[in-house]
Length: 191
Image (tube, rainbow, N blue to C red; front, side, top):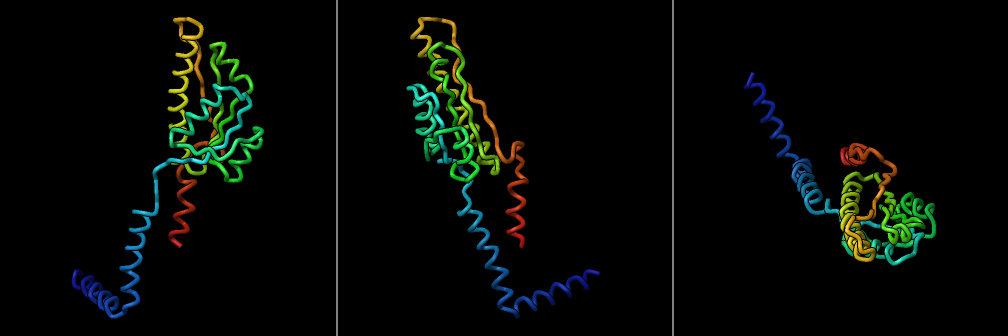
């Protein structure tokens, strides 16, 4: 049995070595894939395109936007005039993230109550969506601590008032399944 298998292996190696085109494809394609997957594919998530709908237009809301922008994780592409424009920017592919700050944001911060913001995230790429959610949650958490400290100082209280709460909404792939993103790309690679 082993003699039959070894005979087939030697025969196939003979055909491959005799055919320079097949040999070059056997060596060139894996080398190109190695370069492509090793250097061209970047899995680091930073400078995620972001649009902002700031309906409050107060210094606290601008400070939150600045904190997100200055983090290096988000790149402010535009300020939009409505919630629909923010959602449309994600739908059209102009942004991966949209920050929506409601009208009562500034008043809630001044009263020491919990202020909420909404983060719309394009979930079509689960890796980017999860990294953007984690980064935004961390940045909003730090900003919330700063807001709480400033409110305590301003009100002369010792009890901690509410901070800033982020409520994320994942669009297009709410469960963030990686198969929805990876399988179409693999089909293209295999073809």
